[in-house]
Image 1 (cartoon, rainbow, N blue to C red):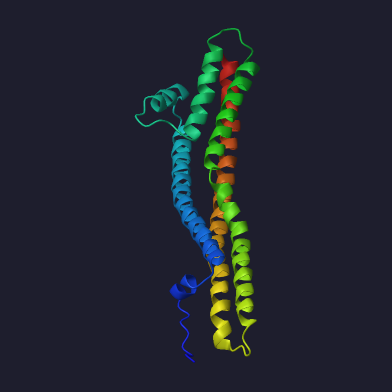
Image 2: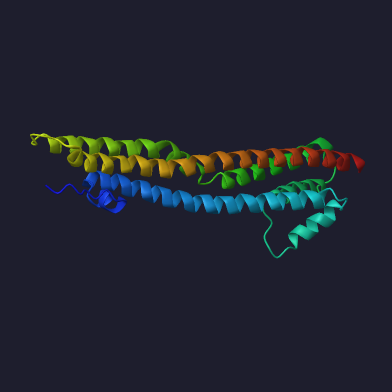
Length: 227
């Protein structure tokens, strides 16, 4: 009897049952898609943080609101993030103000609503793909476990007709089954880490934008009551 058993990863995957191979394929595809989303989301959030830092520095530098508004609207690149929140708020404030004889509180509340609407759109955009990472992080270990259980069941079925089971006969079936769990963890761990990190960054950005809206509202109240 040939006692040399090839337990390389390639042969374990190649010799696995069709169901286990399908499980591995699903997990590998989930991992590839997750890493794609991770790189894209990291780039998107990093750009948003840099943009927020730059805008807040300019906003609190003492620049006139009208000047900042004109500067942002004349940019070649379309404003985004906190810039759009500011533009929507200031544009609504100016539009209502031009009507004349409008109560200052109405001016401010109208601008505040416009900014909160834009904030909701911004957060919804930034939250895109995060549910997929959460799903991969939570479901992948169970999908991998299903493949492992199925593979072990097949391994034990193959031993039914054998008079004497040896480690050499059992090891390949058990090993190929455990590969499914390993791939499941490989897909889940980065997705969970990325989801938690991105969620934390998103919450911090939301807090910063909320604070900006409140601070900007105070400035608009002063402006509304000054004339």
